[in-house]
Structure formats: structure tokens, C-alpha cells
Length: 136
Image (cartoon, rainbow, N blue to C red):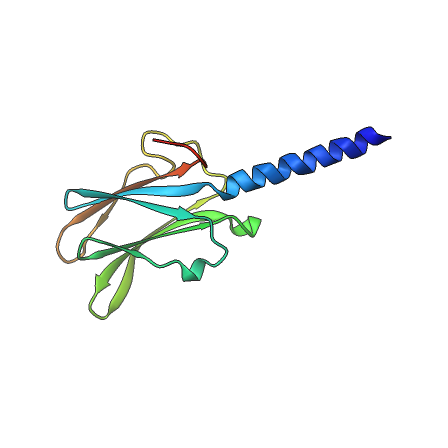
């Protein structure tokens, strides 16, 4: 009689531990512009509209939105904006639904390139999921 309850309890503990470990995962994006590479990190958020973009060089803004819930919307969304005088203009959007595919040399995104519509510059990026506690 105790065994089913014990198994259920163990399953709940294991599921809770897994959820805690997954919640600590982060997305790392390696963004290169003008010969300089920045590594941008994002943790899961429940408020995607509050995630601010990060300046990359003098022209681009890059934004990583990592949503785990609700399950139907769980994804990593990547936005690149042109930082114009009259406001940010989206010029590239990519969405990767969870679970993410196994990463290759250039993570789950592959190497991506975005071009400036005015100055002919190029921004390159690729992103990977980083497990909690993993080192590189």
C-alpha cells in the first residue's frame, strides 16, 4: 500500500528537481559586430514585454526572450532592431519553439547574419542553451 504513494512522492520530488534545474538554464547568444563579440545571456521570463534589448555597436539592438510557459508559447525568440533616431525598427525576428533541437557547432540557431539597411554592416549571431552549472 505504501509503495504507490512512495513512488508518487519520489516522482514529484524528481519532477520538482528537474523543473528547478530547467528553470536555471539560460540562453547564451554570441553576437559579433564590427569585429567584436559579445555574449548575451537570458534567463526564462514570465514577462516577455519587460525584456529590454541590448545595444550592439552604434546601430543594432538585440533582444532575447526565453519563455517556458505557457507550454503552447514556450520558445526562444530573438529580435534584432535598427536603432534609428526616431525609434527602434525591427529588421529580423527568429523563433525557436521548445524543446530546442540539439545544438551543433553554432548552437540551436545555426549562424545567423543580419545586415544594416543603411551602412552595409553585418551582425552575426548564434545561440545555445546553457545548462545550469555548465562551464565553457
